[in-house]
Amino acid sequence: MLPRDKVQYLINRHLELEKELSSGQVNKKKFAEISKEYSDLNDIIKYAKEYLSYKKDTDDLNTIINDKNSDSEMKEFANNELENLKNNYEINEKKIKLFLLPKDVADSKNAIIEIRAGTGGLEASLFASDLYKMYEKVSQKKKWNIEIISISKSEAGGLKEVIALVKGKNIYSSLKYESGVHRVQRVPDTETQGRVHTSAATVAVLPEAEDVDVKLDEKDLRIDVFRSSGPGGQSVNTTDSAVRITHLPTGIVVSQQDEKSQIRNKEKGLKILKSRIYDYERQKIEQERSKDRKNKIGTGDRSERIRTYNFPQGRVTDHRINLTLHKLDEFMEGEIFDDMIENLNLQAQQQELIKINQ
Image (cartoon, helix red, strand yellow):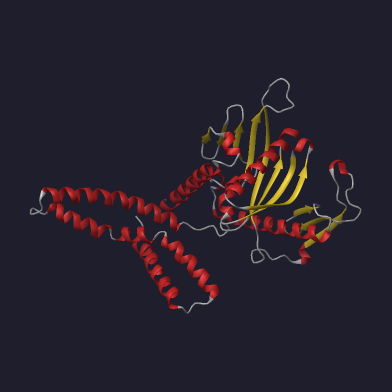
C-alpha cells in the first residue's frame, strides 16, 4: 500500500502548479519548467484522486449493501461497483508507483549510437551495416533525425564501425536498451555449402552530453593530430587533419578523421568524448547504487549478449526478457521495433517495482 501523504502530495502539487500557471506572473524560463511538471502530473492526477477516495467510496457502498432497507437491485449495483473499485484500486496503485519511480534524467536526451563489427570477419561487418540501416528505418518512421558522426567501411558494403547522433524526443529512453552484443545466424552470400554462420556486432548507446553535464578542462586533454588513412592504411589527406583526443583522468580515447578539416574533426571528437565521459560517470554511480546490476535490464554492459537474429528461422530473440518475435524481416525494417522496446521497458519497470516493495 502506498503512503497516503505521498499520493496527497501529487494532488497538492498539481493544484499549486495550476495556480502558478494561471497567475500570469511566471517568467518564460520557469513557465516552461512548470508547464512540463504540470503536464506530467496531469497524466496521473485522476488515478491519485481515485486512490485516495477508495476507502470512503468502499465504505459508502458497504453501507448500502448492509442496509436492510436497500432493495435487491440497489444491492446488486453496489456489489458490482465495489468489485470495480477493488480492480481499479490495484490498477491505480500500480500506475502511481510507476509514476513515482526515480526518473532517469538522461531519458529525454538525444543519443549517440556506436555500432562495431565483432566476431565473424566480413559477415560481422555486413551485419553491423544491417543494424545501422535498421536504426535508420526506425528513425525515419518515428521522425527522428539521424546523422553520421564517424564511419569506417569494410569490403562489400559492410561497416567496421559507425557512430551516429540521433535527435528527437526522448531518444535515449527509446534506445538505451540496445546496448550490448547483437548476434546474427544466417547463411552468408559467400557460403557455397549452405552452412549457417554465427557472427556478432556490438552496440553502445550513450546519452548526448551537454555542456552542463560535462566540463572539460584543457589540462585533462591530450590532443594528437595525424594524417587520415583509408582502407589498407593509405593516406587520404596530405595534411594532419585527423585528431586523437585522450581524456587523461579516465583514459577514454576518441579518434576522428572523417572530415578534411582538423577543426571539424576536433569538434566531432569532443562531442563523442563528452558523451562517453558522461556515460562513464553514470555507470560508476549506478554500479555503486545497485549491487545486483548484472541482473538488471539495461545495465549498459557492452559484453552482454542481448539479442539473436536468426534468419533461417525468421525470428529475433531478446535474451534478457526471453521474448521471441517471429517477424524478423519486419523487425529489420523497423516495423515492430516498438513491440520489443515496450516489453523491455515494462520488464525494467517491474524490476524497479519489486525493489520498491521489498
